[in-house]
Image (cartoon, rainbow, N blue to C red; front, side, top):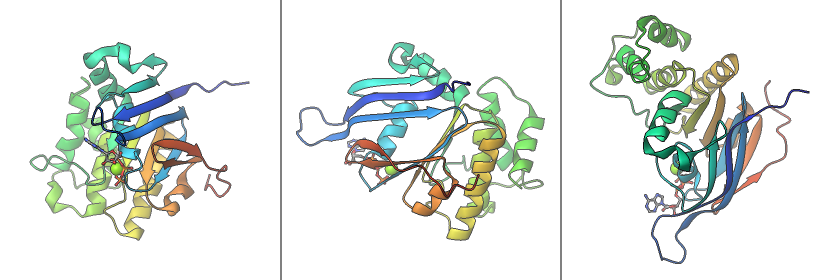
Length: 233
Ligand SMILES: Nc1ncnc2c1ncn2[C@@H]1O[C@H](COP(=O)(O)OP(=O)(O)OP(=O)(O)O)[C@@H](O)[C@H]1O
Ligand SMILES: [Mg+2]
């Protein structure tokens, strides 16, 4: 039997932004495990704690209480430098507002991601852009691309490092339904082909079609939904 190792393990995670205030817990004992190669959708109302959870997993912020392990390593013991290294090398990020650097071309946005991990290979950047259907558009600046194209640059930027996990916070939140679906399909396919795990925050149930598992965040706690029988795989 093959035992799949979790890429991320979150145990009894609590987050309070404002110390002392009574009802300010954004997370209240959240638990989560993501296995290698898994696509997980995270649903939940606005304010339920989804982004908070992603930021903590990414090591961008620190929990009030609880444990986060990435590749079996406790984030807390890694220290600031260790967390930065881990974030650069093992994680890819995709945001709702694309977050491309406006003064860099599409190619440069992707290439920068490689430079940051000491792998400045222009061929890899070009291949990544081609793999999201943006061949020939590498010289364009973000404002010269459509929303869907910008998000595809963001996907190329995330996958080019072949990270263990992609954290996506409402990646289709700013796209029309058709473009959003195309982007999701592409993201899911790329993750599958490269055995990358994907944790994707979403408001829409439709997005879950692309997930192995659906999790629901309610008031800072994660609950598992029934297995996704309608998954496309
Ligand atoms: N930096 C912060 N300082 C103080 N409170 C915060 C901060 N960030 C988030 N919160 C609060 O924590 C709670 C959870 O917020 P979070 O952003 O995680 O929700 P979310 O599920 O991502 O919502 P949305 O779907 O609207 O993006 C909310 O009550 C929010 O106001
Ligand atoms: Mg959010």
